[in-house]
Image 1 (tube, rainbow, N blue to C red):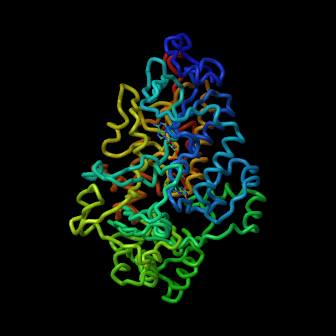
Image 2 (image 1 turned 30 degrees about the vertical axis):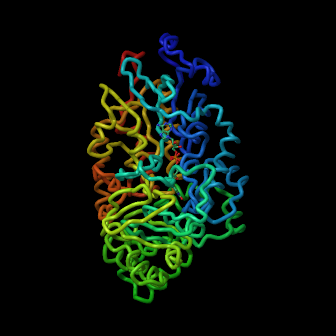
Image 3 (image 1 turned 180 degrees about the vertical axis):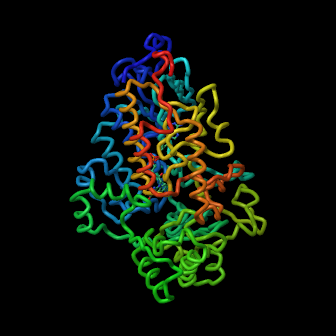
Length: 564
Ligand SMILES: Cc1cc2nc3c(=O)[nH]c(=O)nc-3n(C[C@H](O)[C@H](O)[C@H](O)COP(=O)(O)OP(=O)(O)OC[C@H]3O[C@@H](n4cnc5c(N)ncnc54)[C@H](O)[C@@H]3O)c2cc1C
């Protein structure tokens, strides 16, 4: 990619340039800046290097890994199976890495990501412990001016946000938190040295995915664990086990082909048998047989037991009631079991959890469940916390309160596009994107798994690879056609936003107060953010748009060519 505005570069020499002096040419003038060094940022860097572009990654953490760098809480592991939750962009990687369990633990996934970074020598183009604070598009140069919290300033043709859908950890604004004399932790920013809860009175706030993974393990260690639950969650048994060597070998034999099929599937996941039958057509016996068999298989396959579970409330009720019957059959105290049964929203419309011994843990003498829906937490006190109903004393509090999902990390950056328009302002009523890849008015900025793409409703590595490949093809196309900029048009974006909403409204998803809708963040606009039309359909649409000369995007020859 030809570099532009070289004359201006002398003015922007900063200390960063000494740090960056490895990519060749003037380091302050890059072809691309990538923000984030998780699965997305690493693969993006690898692909851009393959095009011969100069690219630099900025990462707030001290090393690669993203989600798997930050979320080190006890029990953290993937809930999409290891053999599927890995890169598939080349056949060698799945062959040379050995997963040990059906669902890999966080340390194992982090080791894997580190292995990939080493294999492709990625760290040399990553600046760690550096948070990007602003990205401003300069219409006079068609370049992005990027700044960091370390005082770095550089300019790049492309700005690629690999900031993660679940990377802005959120501690609710509880009164009195500063006064707490014990230790407190957020699952999404867990200390690297681990936490020893032995002999401690621990309170955990939240019962989403991270809580459901960590509660059984914290309960084994702590003197007493008190779980504060606002909304009970549907959780399916993981049935974790050592990885089946035969299954592993069968996938390794031709992983590329396996991944191609995943890319054409509904959710980027191959395990789990789709079923064309409606739950409403099945006899009581068939229903129980199908649900029971999938429950025993473990994992997300249960959600595909019948084709209409996420579409039809009556069908959904059957699945929901089955899960509730399992909770009631597991938890010995009927009052606790009832509290743990989700009743206010359809099955699957909040992120379904996958657990090992979650419900069983409530049979332990050292675990107490507290309902904070009926009696909310009023304040954190110096010794614990107080709800409308009582006081608790703790040595440690764990916030398993989730993330400002999908938009949080992006909007923490001061992003300004054409005419100095702030992305935060543009998205004040909810994110607006074309394909989840670009937002109109922000040329040459891409969001990997951005809102409006399947992202969190899919195996995210499949979605990440699809986006990175699409962006790489797009950049290649611009180069081959002598174009400098690409930008979503407003009509294409409007039509896509309408389509994303229309598809969501055909499902039961909008019926839950989920983080998919931003409902966990006070004041966040209620908009269904991920695209639910299916990974394969979505990928084909992206492909078609590219094949049609990037339909819905405006391509520009750039300022050097007298503007387009
Ligand atoms: C506990 C947990 C379990 C999960 N399990 C699964 C699973 O089983 N299957 C699945 O498909 N998905 C799962 N996910 C989703 C997971 O986030 C994705 O699968 C994937 O890891 C996302 O990769 P990413 O590179 O897009 O983002 P991330 O891994 O989130 O990486 C983004 C990086 O960007 C950095 N960053 C953000 N803003 C800035 C900034 N301004 N400046 C510098 N750096 C910045 C962050 O520090 C972070 O390291 C899980 C998520 C969590 C939290």
